[in-house]
Length: 86
Image 1 (tube, rainbow, N blue to C red):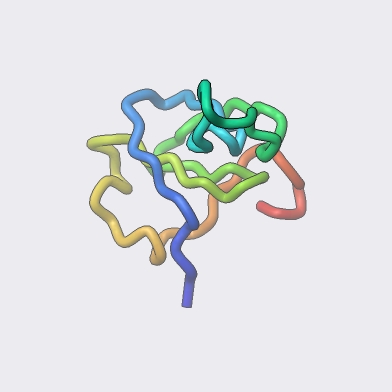
Image 2 (image 1 turned 90 degrees about the horizontal axis):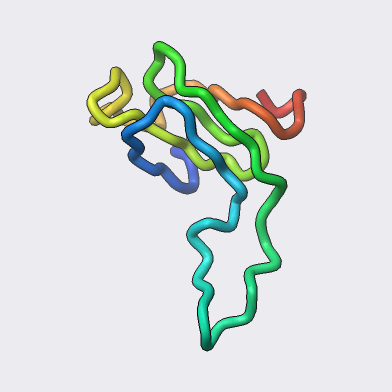
């Protein structure tokens, strides 16, 4: 049984970037986010999604083959991060 990704983001472009901290609140009344990882760039292929190798965020192309699919049923397609994590 597969586990769904911790976070799934719907995107409009095949090329995306991930730093693991883009969703962390910041601003005038907040300290800068110290969490995250180095920014990496990912390319969504014919499967219609890609997983970040650092934080396991899944980026799904809107209107692509994975849009509307059960995310837990899809295999892990990671780029970047630890090569053994793919």
